[in-house]
Length: 334
Image: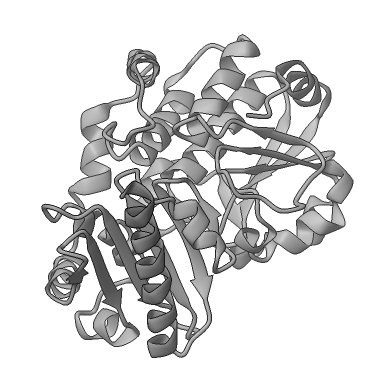
């Protein structure tokens, strides 16, 4: 935990023009934290822009009904951000995860501030405000608003609730505490609608996505007496069922739901030939350490990375690393 609240609050109070950004393939914690912090800073009279490298995924556009999130992919130029006196990176601590916004951050290095809850990190900034025990970056943003005495509004509460609920797996992950529910209750009291948010998150599947889910589950392979499950998604799978790239989100958690599994791994082939790898664990296997072997990171129970192809060779390397980590875990417990 590296949260010097006095220093953080002073930085946020003293800035005037802020740009907020997060990782590529943004999820609800990334987008919700950006929108929540924007609302908090605007309540203090700040000029705030949210600019990501990539456009908001189509299935998550509901979180930003006023279209306040911009992107380099949709026409924002790095020069447009030169007037910003603070560059805040949310929900990641790694250059590689910023995509094209990483180059913008490098040009503004002395103005970069990181607010995150992930364990892994590199030399992204000299100003870190991290709480690796926080269940979501949205939780840290909530605490920022509380300490800045900014009243919760529906516009702030809804994206923060979305971030908190998704990064806790619907409040079922080990990171959840009693305070998680108390914060969720305060966000609901401020206007967040759990029913509407759940519907947007989990009841908007296309038939193509369901076909992709079925194909992924059908191809999953277990090992180590069913304790480890590995699944794959190739580009041909996505194309053949006419799915969208965003339809691959959360597939790894579906495989972890298979009875008896303790570790789930999914390899998703990207259009450029690289492979996105996601690791999930019920707690005993350290996913962050596993992902770090491939240049990635995250949390003990959930982490990820991007590896180079070809797919078959990457699959072999990843499975071998998982097998080695699992056997080492069993040997240590013996």
